[in-house]
Image 1 (cartoon, rainbow, N blue to C red):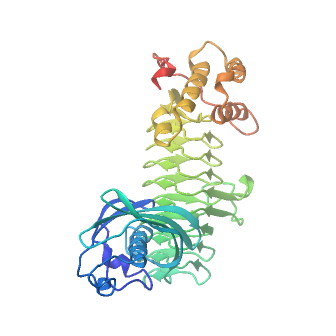
Image 2 (cartoon, rainbow, N blue to C red; image 1 turned 90 degrees about the vertical axis):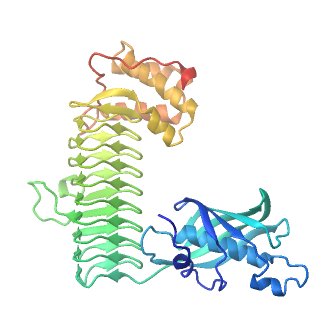
Length: 422
């Protein structure tokens, strides 16, 4: 969706009256933006800077970069709920003159910050030559909450600044919503539920309802959700039980597609993806970066490892290996999740070491204990990811864990690829 430049820049406080951005040519939401400004002789500031020899003032260069940064930081994909204000400029450098007829290419990258303050790096070029650069500090401020007149919000609920509550949504007395959240039409959020900033709960989702556990007797339990999570239509997330610790926990930057279900006392990390209808039983742990594909079910007390890939309509009854492709009913391991690791920027040398470790586990004639000893004794496999894989398998045999899935596909074996082909 193209950015509405005038609407977004109206939310940049104390800005120069004229818009200094002509068009956006690249946009990676929340991370990077590239815009264009054509410098013309009829710009107002050229009248005094300087008569007969017009030069674009350095302060206008900074203002132009700030406007581009505001487009990057204020875009929310829907009606904006935030405002930006320039708080500071660091390390500004003006390397070349900018004159009428120049075409400015303005690249701004979001480099992080802290709550309420964003740090961005802006670079302006003309014909691939840098003319100005600076670090920009922008304060981010939220509007007051916007609650639709038909929504039912209990007086005991806490609604953060910038949060939008849609028509016929229901929010219970123990709910605490952070800043900049969006609650869709007819969604329900109830119980002792805490949601961080920037989450999106779409229509008919149910978050924080009582668990589907026959032992539950109405005791006080809770649900804790981090930042920037997306809960699509008809997703159900249940709070915990006394026997499972009392709290269901979800980290940051997760996506739950329509009809996904998270049962009581589950612990979900960050940057996970749940396909349509993916279902977790109670007490399941899903670590960072894992994918649970559409229609899959994970048995209670199972553990899904870091960056694991669970294929569509898979039934997981034991722990699912980290970094692996686990597929089928009942689940079998189809080797390393190489494509997923590459997409997440895992170095090729680490992927090669994981492949060798998986050969010991899946393609050798060693039992699991012997394979782990071989991995431990192979100096060429020394890296944090392999160490975590070994620790995951050993811990899966302890306590209430159900063991780990190491079954290979029937009738085929994963080809033993050469390390040079990674």
